[in-house]
Amino acid sequence: MASSSGNDDDLTIPRAAINKMIKETLPNVRVANDARELVVNCCTEFIHLISSEANEICNKSEKKTISPEHVINALESLGFGSYIAEVKDVLQECKTVALKRRKASSRLENLGIPEEELLRQQQELFAKQAALRRQNITVFIYCNSTPTRSEQSRHTRGLLCLRVGAVVVPVWFWVRL
Picture (cartoon, rainbow, N blue to C red):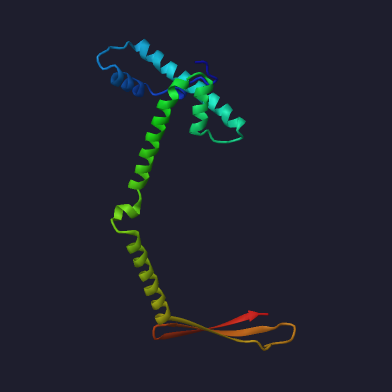
């Protein structure tokens, strides 16, 4: 495969993956290293061909992301229509596995507590927090809006009282009008 970069390893399938597929497909057959290298190059070229065609189809449909439908259309346009049924089966299997992974990683399902119970517990915590706020902390603000120095420089004197339990903390402040 001709490539513009000097390092072809960046553009090939890992040899270990190909070796595993060869062993699974042909368990009782010995395959020469040259033949394995040829399989790697053929797979890489096939993927490049399909992805290039899928990219063109994607661009024609004015999309920015290649979707599975673009790949299926690329297979059809390149004459690999006989693979489409199997590709669709594998796609469905991948979607199912991905959905199971997402569900398995969901924190709610890992807790084993129904969502309604979690919602009830959340509302209970909110209510407790609101009650604590009402009981322990109260803020009073008093402002005097009369001018203190002169008509050009109007200031307002204010008092902020913060009550935490039985303790009241007064804070005086000035606000320029």
